[in-house]
Length: 188
Length: 178
Image 1 (cartoon, rainbow over the protein chains, first blue to last red):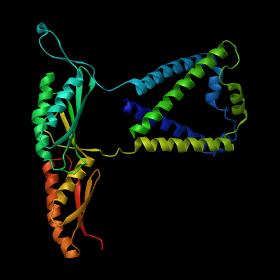
Image 2 (image 1 turned 120 degrees about the vertical axis):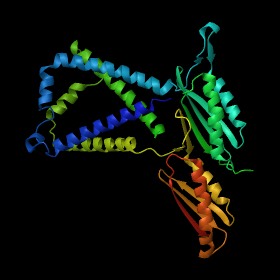
Image 3 (image 1 turned 45 degrees about the horizontal axis):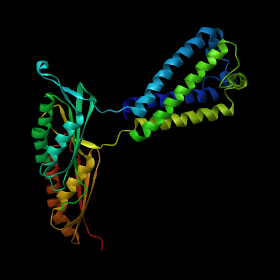
Image 4 (image 1 turned 90 degrees about the vertical axis):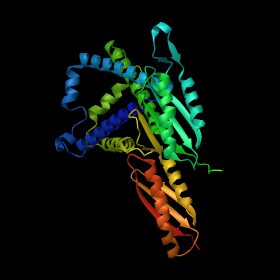
């Protein structure tokens, strides 16, 4: 489940919109737009008059806008409930004459984490591949033992494991997010 | 934040879709001169035609909207808690970082390794790391004597990590309570 950026933007806009609506209502009610305005009924304003005069086409336009909003909202709901940020099968670049190589993301992450877990000072390693299959990104979380030499481990990860992953996918500029953590378990 | 945003976003999306569908149904019903189908909107229309802006109900609803709007904006605009501190990398395509908890634990291990230190508490924030070490011996002389080795060990560990923006370090050594 993702769409975190969309959620944040939409909720911020919604919050701003209802804050502005509330502030406008309070200003109108307390006489901020003039005492005369505050004594009028809610529908006695230019916008209401305009809607009343242009009703036929305006409501049709509103209904069409609502149709678009419904479609966008449904897509948002589907994204929130069923979509994933995990990449699909990745096509490894190479000569087409020799066939196409398809790599399952889990195969790469399994090989990568198995390699990392053999490194000195590593407690556990977890990995996943996110994004589009044509532009994947590896996200790795490596938990080191409390006594591990973190700078040395970081160097080794960069020069060996991450280099191997890039080599396997044939992408020297493959984006990799590496999160180093330290185990809560005291060293035995 | 993300865990709160997802249900909030789902509620908003469902409400938007529901309100839009109701409006479409009512517009079509009004166009074919049928009576309201889902919402009895003529009652709302008459209410808006006789309610004045200075009515108490308008102030109450405006206040509710202001409070809810401020709450949502406060939740959304609050700076996210730092969970990872970036490490310098040899390759631009690598985004390496040490977790906040990981940094706290490695600094704690460094301070605990000093003889005479019995316990260490580390707090890491966006720009500051506080190390509070407790000495086995009592008295100010003992704690003063331990402050430099503890600071050196922790500083050495922090510098070796090669963080992109290392937090400012504050080390305090206290004697054990009596």
